[in-house]
Length: 188
Image 1: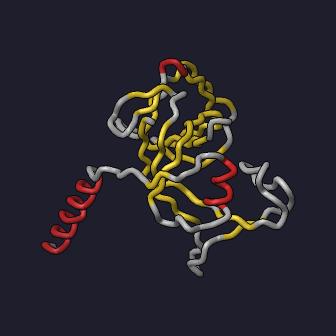
Image 2: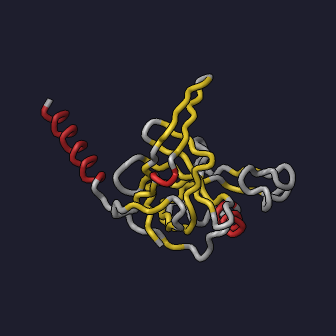
């Protein structure tokens, strides 16, 4: 009984202390355009489990909200996809969206965002306009096969066969998928 109590107490302490751990800025990559992201982050997996940073804009065009998490994307200055972002609602490194209209139809939830009254919250909790060019730091993790622990490779079946990198994917090219963890947003 005492062991269980001590284990629970140490687990709670660890969880509380990790919540306050500040997120570090990542290594700022010398590129922030879709072509270079395709070549350096999808065609290779050299950055696996490293903390990196990309410059770009947070795009809400294909926004999905799941509980307290906002699914959106980081795009370059031309509006081309760089990375998916899963941003948790918080008072830092998050988005504050002013919803002006909601409608539920056929199990889908449609929202109208009041863009002038919505904003990005940076790492210091300061508000930035949604149109602000930002530096997004994150831990990059490539998908791995659970049984073999090897990286999962996908192959373009024809030119333009990748949903986000149509201009760059060539038939027969193999590429990796990754996700961004522990997101930090900074003003540029």
